[in-house]
Length: 168
Image (cartoon, rainbow, N blue to C red; front, side):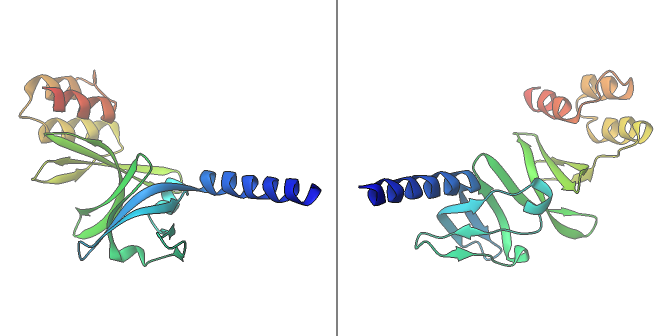
């Protein structure tokens, strides 16, 4: 009887640990192959841009070269390749809208944001306040109300700016 209880507890503990370390996801490769119903290992955002480990439908652990991955989901998070400054980089998608998308790249605690006009250009959001208001104000000039609020420093939160732009 004790061995059955111990076995049951061991199985329950293993399932609980497995559920905490992995989340359901989908992977799209650079060749546009789609790998569905996988369990993607949870890692910090900065590590998620460099490595991916998942358990496939057969229960085997896989660690493909991150360069072969176009985008992937892990639970509610989505990581996509974007084109910036002449290179393709992996970034976490924070907002997806009809007009703008927002991406974040976490490099060991240092966060860089990218704003993309849907089906158009993408810019790296400047970190200095003076460049932020100038570059973003000009980039979003199609919406004069938002651009003016950015230039006057009334709007400074990039997530709020993207959400307002997508609503308007």
